[in-house]
Length: 337
Image (cartoon, rainbow, N blue to C red; front, side, top):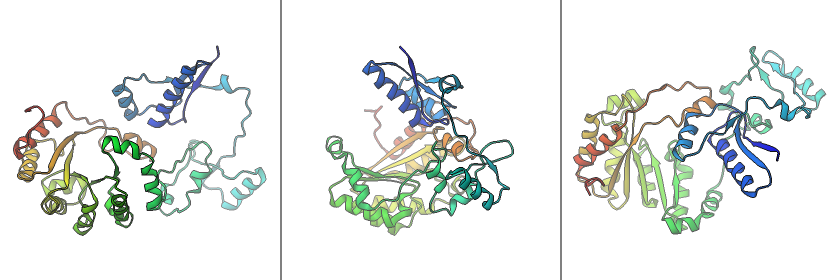
């Protein structure tokens, strides 16, 4: 029985690895051939953590597929360096009847000037790339189009009590779409939640609150100067918005969350200060989120350096912060129950 390897693209993300594993398992279950999940490039730390978490082995590595594709003919497009004029490039594309031509650096790697992406409206390079070397994340949709997608899972919401969560970035920075979306979701009886950093005008948050069932509110630091050093702005607006939200909308459940970051807020002083701040409010929960490196792959995709490097959070730190905050604000933890 011939073996067939199932793989995604050359720089695999988590979706690519999961798809290879899933499709190989499906085809093997059908029993017609021998399918093996494989990958062609480096597996990120994010993907490795998820594979370990759910008990899956890494797909096999394929470093050379020449023997499998030796009978295929490939049209290799011409590669140009950045000094080539637009006129010359256009003539090459016309003469060879191709719609795109790669620009390479002196070492042969693809040249990518990301500054042009900031003002580009069409993203033609991503649309033209057959190998998905450039991928567009996100689409422009209307409120009705978004809610039609949300309503496809209405049966699951009915069973789980779930609904639609707006996340980001900061979703309320886009109030022109976020607020109409929340209003219409409430009209359609869809439960709503939002993830926010709180650094937004109070009027915007106040307008959104009546259409929300749940708010996930980040508090990263209680000391404003330390907050400014780590984030770039002080925390006065954030804490003011949180206090107003808890006071003016007492029936709205707010879940305060803190990503526990080594060297930034992994200390008892922060935990006691936050616990004191939350003391006395009834409809509020708290969760300390352990620092992880699951987003490092995105930095690789964007050719950016991951500033935190290999820093990790020691075991038990997030649990200690959680315990101090809960005890200080007078909450009953699951352990005490």
